[in-house]
Image (cartoon, rainbow, N blue to C red; front, side, top):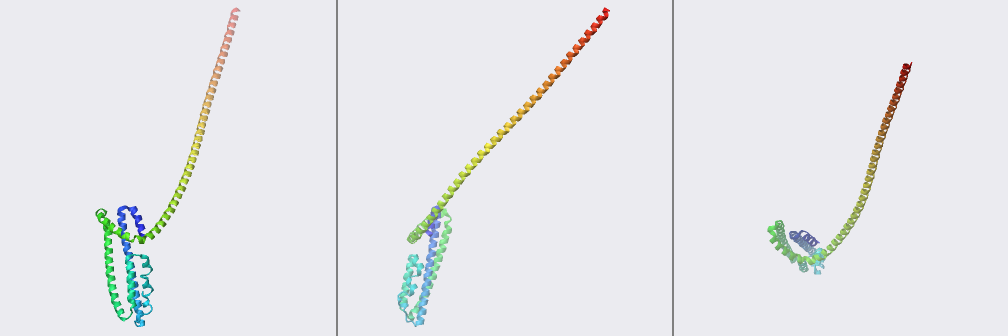
Length: 295
């Protein structure tokens, strides 16, 4: 599982990411080994104490459980279910030590109990030294990780470290392959489902967008049609109004001309009548004058 994550990070981050990821992978692997060793040591101590107590109770006789050839069920198991799942070289060595310890326990007797205490002290000392060594190694890895950030200066050194880590990774690859394959299949399935979901979502969004575009186009056309009709109506009304104004103006002009013409006719008629009257009066006056002269 962890190495799968590393591979993913490597493909995404390139060379610098690959080197950093491998440092983390090695650090994690060392932590796992350290935990396994501590577990084995704890179980060995627990088993030895249990056997010593049994011998004390039975007077150092070496009971049925000690004669079993493995120092109890846990001893025969070689470190429990956790160590069986690990599959590393150190773990196999741990099983060998536990079995050897089980054979020594078969002997039974008071002398071995005393030797067991000395062995336990040596084991404690050895464990302490191993722990100090591991702490030193962990500190060193931390410093390497910090130095690694200076990419340009440390590139050569990182390359060498990467080769070393690749060797160790190759060594542990067989142990991790099953989990990696399972995790990869799971990841691929998840990615496939996510991709299908994403494609469905994109398709849905595309259809919605097309529908919205159609609706928008339709609304735009309707708006344009409406605006065109309103404009035509307005133009028609303006034309009609203009026409009515023109007709009104022409009518007023005609009425004015008619009025003027009527006035002129009236004036002419009056003038003619006046002239006629004057003429008649003149004629009458002339006749009177002639008649008077005649008398």
